[in-house]
Image (cartoon, rainbow, N blue to C red; front, side, top):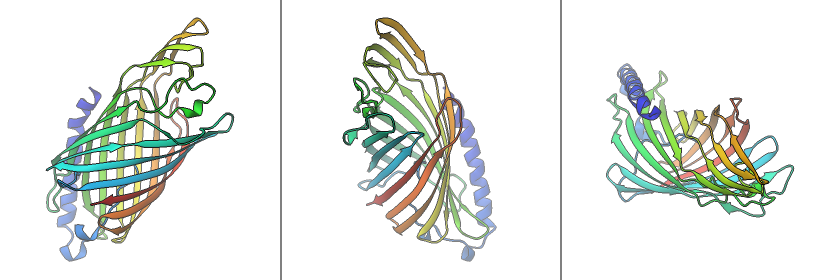
Length: 315
């Protein structure tokens, strides 16, 4: 419901931004402006594109990262595999593998698979240089509980999944702005709402239960807002920055532990983060990006820093 109420407001804001963009274009002569063909992009670290692939074309984008907490390292990799199935319609999958290292406990013995996601995206509108309408799309993503999440024994670090089926609905936008210098700023603004199923939990788990626990976890909904900009310094070099806000509703765990009834509520949490990065694009279809996601202080959340490297290839 929150997402449904937000979409009309966000559409109005994006369209207003597009009007400003068109005014900026008209105030700068064509000879002074960088052309769209001269700007090559990899994409920011976090914000998904609102564009879809042409039919028959595909995208491969592997990510490598290390989420560094106060006493943990979560090393992992996820790969975006997208395919243009039809005009304005793309499908894809996102497999994940990971390896956790903890300071006061046993780390993961080897790389393990996490939860896998499949997605479909439909594009509504397409940005045009002399127009004011941004590229817009809706994405539906389903995450399947393929990663280990309970019966962890003494190795809590083996938990790489949530055990839940999670549906995420995203509304993505993308537009272009010509700055006074004539260089292009590409801007994305996305919102997403996630809903998860209940989870049967046995033993030690990612929900903080111990070996004697038997019961059920009910993950709360999540809401994310992501704004990102990319500034084309040259045709090859691009500066990127994401700003993200995440809000998680209460997760409830109910069952028995050590023969006694147990009920735990995590409470709501929220956090802000930024992800500065730099891109180098070898061609219009191949680029690399490196940066870091920094999650700052929030409510009922942990600070972390995650160096990230990704390669983007489109065919």
